[in-house]
Length: 512
Image (cartoon, rainbow, N blue to C red):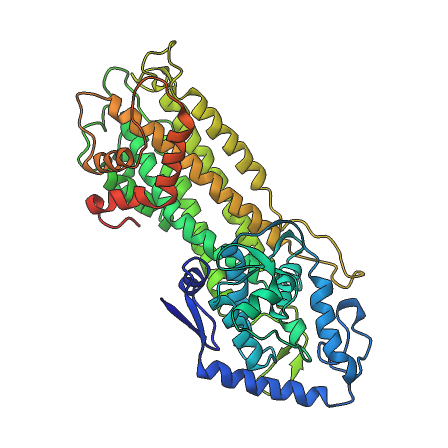
């Protein structure tokens, strides 16, 4: 099994995906263990002094003015975890919780939190045992980090609360730890706070969304090319010299992808035939501009994610010169913004994708295709209601594009009076990515059927490869009306698994 070694300088997006989705094992580097021990010495020295230090010998948040005596500090750390584990609602997905735990471990190993090496090792042991704390949908405002979600994870570390075992069964966390020979942690000064103060949940979801969207944008370029082909459009608008004079990198990449898919097609370039068109409709002609803008948004989001992956997010932090300083680095604004930006871009890609599908189904605009791509229109309804489903998904995407980060709601007796709502932005982006996958899958279903209905002209080799792979995966082709949901589910699985891209790239070469 793949192993990810956590050091002091952060982790990569690939590391997050390996642990969250691939079940990779986690190890602490010698450097990380040394940094943890050195920072802990500083915290222990401060804890022994009579002067109050926030997070070490004081209460938290609006209660930070109270000095806590040494004999009450262990209870203080337990209490912050127990009281902050106040989430409600459905359980969050296993991959999200694993990313959350792993990214908190990343910050702990930076040597800036003051957590003991034994605590970090226990965090790694829980990940390696496949134990997943039960984390709930609601509880994070995205400031002071993802407090409630991280608290539920810390509760498992203490052997309290509920967790899911590697077999998927939810049991008391203490039982699961004992079954795997893991000793619960007795938290000491600073440690409870250090386990809770991070943007780890929203960051983990950002990393996974970017991975999914990278494949999805390539898939959308392929389905856009198939639709252009089925509509007998022109590929001249994809010429590199046209995109070079408006040099947005994403736009150029999308146009190049579409051009590669369409290479060798006999279906393109017929826009001057029976019903002459000077130009194709915007949803066809401007596909690279819209998908490209989304790609450039992803580039910015990756930059933010990479910076955050290299960060140590905690409050207070232990600095190399021995100071322990309060800060505001736990505020989720940088991550929240890009999560919202991605939801906006995804909604627009879904919208233009649906417009192409609708055009394929409308006999007045499809340039000779049968109404709704039906086998016997009137007796058969064809893909009429598949487009309804796609339209409903697009409408939902537009609602999900309303930014969460534009909102703020005060908390903690006005101490935390401006929050990021980054967790909420991440949760709705996950739904948006899910919906966009379905929207692209419906275009694939319609466009492949439409291309096959264009008899007498040969599709591009890449298109033929896409159609053959889709049919082999259970995505049915033209024919009389049938129970449509299983067909659409097969198309969804085909796109979601990256199989559309896999089918095309042996012909086109790697897509951008």
